Image 1 (cartoon, rainbow, N blue to C red):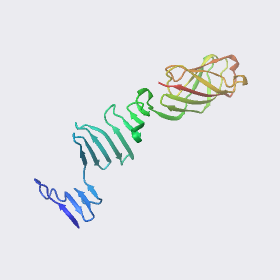
Image 2 (image 1 turned 90 degrees about the horizontal axis):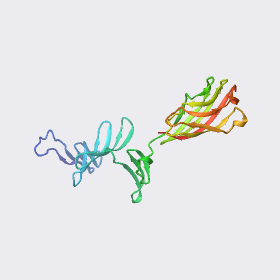
Image 3 (image 1 turned 90 degrees about the vertical axis):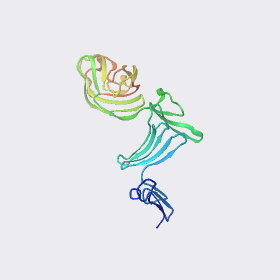
Length: 251
């Protein structure tokens, strides 16, 4: 049985405002609905600050969340859960506003900025981590400055990208052409290089004297120009293998 029920509000009809505020015997307060908890509200909950700032709790069939609204009425930030998509969103609405995570004494450890993620209070755009990615890639090719074309029969390539730093592993099995000479170009790196950088050959099986050698260079502004000095001693080798490791900076 209800302890107190307010059924009318001044200036409105009782039919339209039935059960606006209801206090049940179990010390449960309902606003706009019959209470099922100590406080049950049908609609939006709003807390208003001295200067007009508000915190609003609101629900819908899809979202449940908090909105933080400035004194000028602008919604500055939200925290909400999408019941349909199954994810939480924390968002600073205004460009240049950040999300910070701190420990005791407000010592900052982690910040999300417009440029990415920074650590320990660093806000420099150049130091923001804006990407992590890993995967495989295919379509790598090789060609010589002159002579027949290389035929790649098998490849096994993978990469890890952290920000602008790229680490690649390339494993190629091919038949080398006869009469090839000059530089050869390896094409199909997963990301464009922002400068000329070295690339290291872990192993090739042309002859023992060429194992563990280097010589490839990732060329500026490309994904497909790693060059290697190629001589006649490499001609007519079947089952030619190159295993490569490289790390370079992308744009």
